[in-house]
Image 1 (cartoon, rainbow, N blue to C red):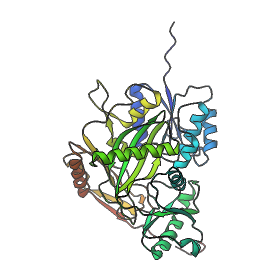
Image 2: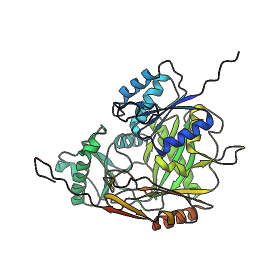
Image 3: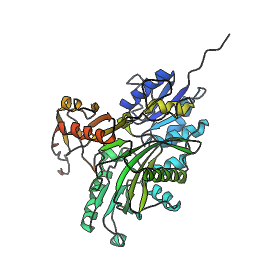
Image 4: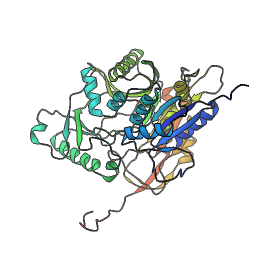
Length: 434
């Protein structure tokens, strides 16, 4: 008698259960794969969403990894994936403990620190801006000597450009450092348990065009899935991102330089397996690696990528490609569709409570626009950058050319109007301070 076929099982580490995890669920059902979600929601609630996710604390990655391996003892695990920056280290420890192909924890940890990234790139001989680490508590005057302007102040551990500020002189430097200190001391940020919340990195401002690159590593070899142009200038003072469009309109020679820099950066970090995302700046001094992360493109932006499997009519999403890659299934190397595509991360014009969204149907009706998702919740407080890290929503477009996609995204965005009202100040009951 034949034994029943065992379904492959993949552990998916994620800080949020939402749009992207539902896309993974749909892809897993198609491939007959069992997903086990690992998340850092409250462990005192007994499976409140009935998804059997394992609750852990990502701020203690080794403890989280131990808890996961204990829970999975005696069970088959065929792959490990991490979505977002915070779960990557716990996922790396679990993969290492289970003997599953993945990146080394030290490599993943380097990706999570802007300071360590700069050190690795400098030591590997990659183009690197000048940089230094400074305490936020009290910046001594001698520490400011030698700093040239403009420069950029960054938190060491946060992502999504949260807290990143360009400053053009000493007065702006001190004001920006004070603002960053308030952000990192906020209860919300302190609760994340991120390391280095008492320090910042100061680095040279790099002018030029910026691109994002999505890739997959297998046995140390890098396959570039897409290069995204960022047509809006990211010059500061804050660096909230907006439009991603692919294929890139860079010259072929420039694209090859970006790919080579991506390969060199991954090799310098020691990354060898799984999804990888990079950000790069191009100017007359070369290609500069800004950030490299051992995870796929964030959140809903993955919907801008589709891949054409052989003998299938409809393209598949990035989530299915990643599952195929994690399991070594055919099709993980499928090419991106030929159509141009893009996403607009809808920026937050000002901090406030979301009261109303107007023009959604008009935006959806713009030729080329394929989807609009308003992810901000009504009556929630939404913070603008640099304190913020969440967008109002995502607008997607697809067309024959990248220029047409960009035009559709801009026209769709112009139809939208978000009404945000200021949050009332709250007075502390003891100190009386607002």
